[in-house]
Length: 149
Image 1 (tube, rainbow, N blue to C red):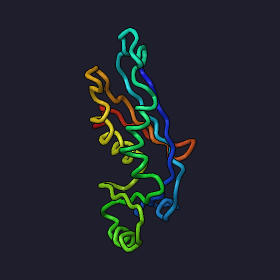
Image 2 (spheres, rainbow, N blue to C red):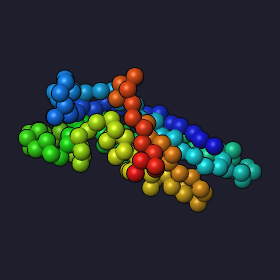
Image 3 (tube, rainbow, N blue to C red):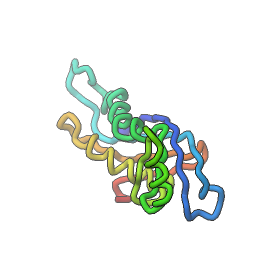
Image 4 (cartoon, rainbow, N blue to C red):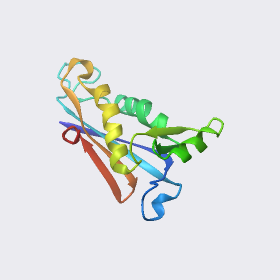
């Protein structure tokens, strides 16, 4: 069985070496989809009977580990040193420094790496993160899976 929970957030970034407009500071309304796979709870009378995981719990984990950190933040590549240095001068600015250009592909993989351990074996059951899909725009997204790691 598979379930998916979608969350949305806003963030800025730039792809410094990119040849088009993406090299400039800009932002997106991102959407994050978290897909879990496993067996539904079969304990009769349990609050989560017949569920893989309550959607509110799926949301709470993704919100805590990704959305609360990335929402209204600027996602910047560590190698973009001048921008990192500038962002550090802004009081109370939310900056997330990542180890590669903050493309949809890299951010999806980074989110997968952060989320996979949080869902793995939850409640002592075989439950795992199957996919993180990160929409950069409504028509453009990247998928990260365990096979990509």
